[in-house]
Amino acid sequence: MNNQDDTDVMMDEELQEAMKLLGQPQPRGVETEQSPTLSALDKARQPKVKTACETCPNSMWFSSPEEVKCYCRIMHMISWSAKDANLITMCDGKFLD
Image (cartoon, rainbow, N blue to C red; front, side):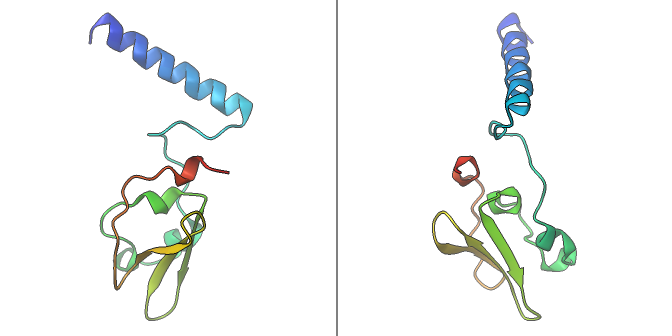
């Protein structure tokens, strides 16, 4: 690493700590807790590829014996379903209140 890389890493760490102290959402790249509904499902019923919706506070995961779905409260749509999986891997929805 060069000096600029070291400075960037240090600034990112300081920003993350400040955001924690202020009670603000963490900047991108920092994971939050996975949906409790999604976590309770068997791995076979969870998305095979990691999606942005898994840790988004604006997503609402629900399941039935036949299917698993995720509803996005920001875009007002089903953002993921076991039968028709949209692979949303990046989204700004987790930064909106």
